[in-house]
Image 1 (spheres, rainbow, N blue to C red):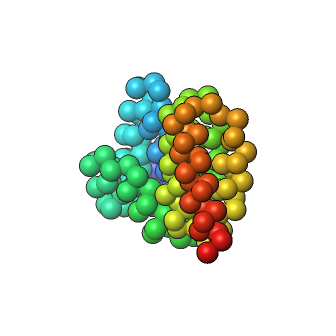
Image 2 (cartoon, helix red, strand yellow; image 1 turned 90 degrees about the vertical axis):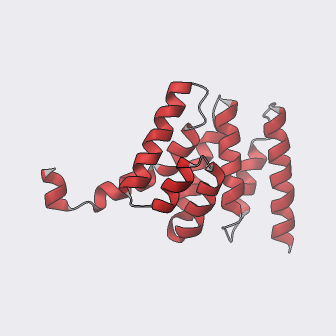
Length: 149
């Protein structure tokens, strides 16, 4: 509390803000206890940041509307949010990879430069999960069409 009084809440707000995407993705963990803890921490983070819009979407379990709202209102943090999702494409857990791909799909609609997303998805061509492969193929197709327009 003394640290907050001396330095203000800005450093803590920055840290909490940077945890939003990882917590969102971890909310899809195969371990039910990890997923529940991540979802609760995400809800607390939204509350701490006074983002009632995000909090409301999380309470209603509108997870991908949460992603859309986050990317829509946090213009300066879009690249960072996208960067935070990339490591989850390498996860050994299929649900985390799928959540990362879906997050990136939502993020793409808010991005001007789709090349980093396309490169990351193309690099994952070795994945053998059918649902992941289908999503990746659909997103890459949509991204390529958007880039050529």
